[in-house]
Image (cartoon, rainbow, N blue to C red; front, top):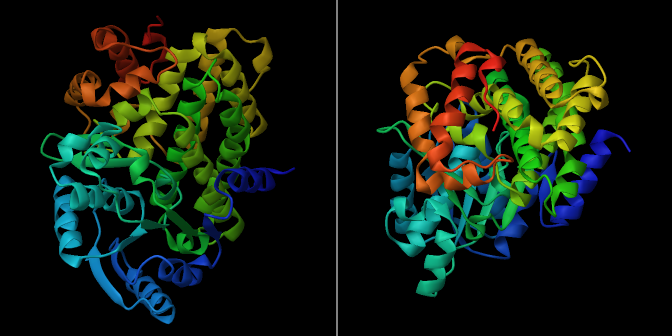
Length: 422
């Protein structure tokens, strides 16, 4: 079974017939919506060419009998808090029976959180953490309105997952809602929509997909669901390593676009099985200088070296994938933890350089020591403690400075030898 077939089988096993994906599926959403609601809110991301898609969606819905549509502009990159509050107010005014979001992770995440605020009230801060939307809904005897999330970019897997990332630009910090109640009931991904995506967005999303798989895989060592993530890791990572350079060279490469969509969906699958950890946590503090996917891609090799002694089985799997893709030399089965961690990190650096990604923080415009200081403070925030707990080498807030500090310093200088293992 090739990587494409393996990815499709895994998605079928997970989502069955509930997930509408592939080329041209945007024209099939009308009947799905019509069975659920007649009054909807369409929340969409503004970008060049989007008006044609919005009109296409409206016509498709109207043909199915859904004509009462409130149109709401979605969120800017990283789902700023201000956009979330505006969307929640407009959503409340719409009286919509169903939410349809069309955009990348930021707009879909904002739509998830906006529906929670619209239905349950309160401020967004009370939902940051795990399971707090479900708890309030249960206490209030309410349920969120159904959500059709139409993904437009391969990367976050937001259309498939229980996560909503919201950014407070005043503090320069991103925070996270994690809750099964916000999983979109009707996920949709028309791969053709991604064909016009800019190379930078495509690359960022692809590396976010790798980060999802890596972090969950490493965090599940010795746990019941490890085998499932190990099964999806190989095709998920390999499709990106093989096809991202092709798409960068030719953005209209349909086969390459399909590969990236399937692979990043597997990343979405991974984060529904287990959680991300250190690299994602640090990325939340780099939001003002790096896109999310780029920040995760930069940080993953450094955390990998820190985790190496505790993740030898999955690390060998990952090393073999990078070796098979031509980025790692030597036999992973014969390397000790330090050798394997270093070799795999260097293979990740090699791939990053091929696609013109930074490999150290000092290569990033706007980086200062203040970003490291902010990341260390954020890691101690109780609302983000799930990231520390999900690490294969779990840390407490009291251990952050001693062990995470050297990881961030290593990432600043591009020096793996500065990392201190527990």
